[in-house]
Length: 289
Image (cartoon, rainbow, N blue to C red):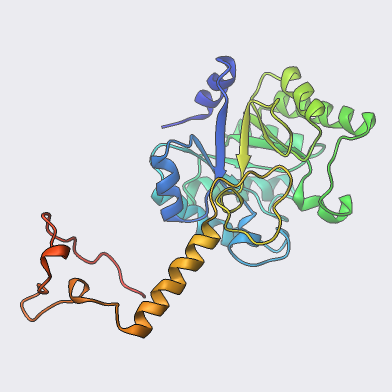
C-alpha cells in the first residue's frame, strides 16, 4: 500500500507520480487496480456528483459518505480526504474533529486543507496527533468569492512570494505534500525546488513532482469546454450517451433482451450456437435497485 513515506520517496528518487479524484466504490476499485498511487476524495464531488455550483455547499457528512465508498474500493492507494468548507474554519478543535472523522469513519489515510496563514497552525496540530496533512496553495476553490472567481494566482511577484512563503511554512508545520493549483509554471517550479516535500500540480505546469486531475474531467464526462489544464484521455460522455441510445432502441424494437439474456424454467435459457460460451455465466451480483 502507498504511504506518505512512499510519496516522499517518489520525490527523492525523481519519480513523477499521478493523483486522481475518486468519489465512489467502483471508480476507486478501477483506479486502484490501474495503479494510481494517490486517490483524493475531493470536495469537487459537490460539482461533479451532487450538482452544486461550487464546492462551498459540500458538508462533512457528504464527504464522509463518499470517503467510505472509496475506502471500500481501494486496497493499494493512499487515500486523502478533502476537508470541506467550514469543517476547519471555526477553530483548531473543529479541524481536529473533522480530520479525525475522515480517518476514523471515512477510512482515509490523510486529509487536505486549503490555504496558508492560520492553516499552518492547524497543520502543526493535526500532524502532531498523527493525522497526515496535504496542503493546497494557489487557486483555492473554497476562497472563490474572495478571489473574485476561479482565477490564476501568483501572477504578481508579491503573490508568488506569498505562495512560496506559505509552502515553506506548511512544510515546517509537517505537511507531507502540497497541491499547487492554478499558478504559473515558473511559480510552481520555484516552489517545487524550494521545498523538500512533494508538490502536486493542477494547472501549474510540468515543473511539479506530481499531477492531479478531476476524474470526470480526465475521462471526458463533464460538459462544456474543459479548463486549459485538462487533457481528456477519453470521451466517455459521448460513449455513454451512444450506449444508452442503443439500449433504448433495442428495448423498443424487442431486440433486447434476447434468448441469451433470459432464464428458462430450469434456470438456463436456450441459446444459439453463436451465443454459447464455454465458461459458466456469472450469477447476478446486483439489480437495478
